[in-house]
Amino acid sequence: MNEVLKTIENRYSCRGYTGAPVEEEKIKLIAKAALHSPSAVNQQKWRLKIITNKKLIDRLSDEALEFLKNDPKSEGAYKRILDRGGICYYNAPCMILVLKDVSEEVQKMNNLDIDCGILVQNMAIAATSLGLNNVIAAMTSLPFKGENSQELKKLVGWSENLEFGIGFLVGYGNNSKEPHEIDWDKVEYIN
Image (tube, rainbow, N blue to C red; front, side):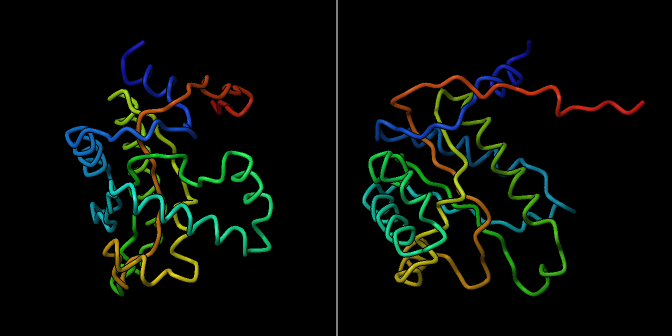
């Protein structure tokens, strides 16, 4: 099996990190993999916000937990996070926010979510190939929905023409896990 397929096969969603910082060169390689991802008509209508400030990530985690606590629809998620130690972002030392450009000329495009999905998968495979653990995390949107959302958006340079696309946490895992079992019943050949 080639190395790319091995990397895809061995990647898992890591929900526990040592907190050790990720080397700047590795973060740059992950960002480069993102920049190489295809997008509709090569518009690349997304922006990456790479956060390595641990105090800021911890604050975002606290804000996310507060949002879950106060949102009646999130009772199950809140309990899961509390059961895992009450840390939303699993002590990851690096958070990458993928934000969609929703400026007026872009609003006609309906493929921004697909483009963000392609981009984050490139980052996940790249990070795994570099010996890093990672998880694609929609939950990284939560601090930007809560009471202090405007202040937090300002802190990360999130302008009004941007919306949340997807989030990504990366670092050195303090655990390992077998990748999920594949289910060939989900595949149907039409000849």
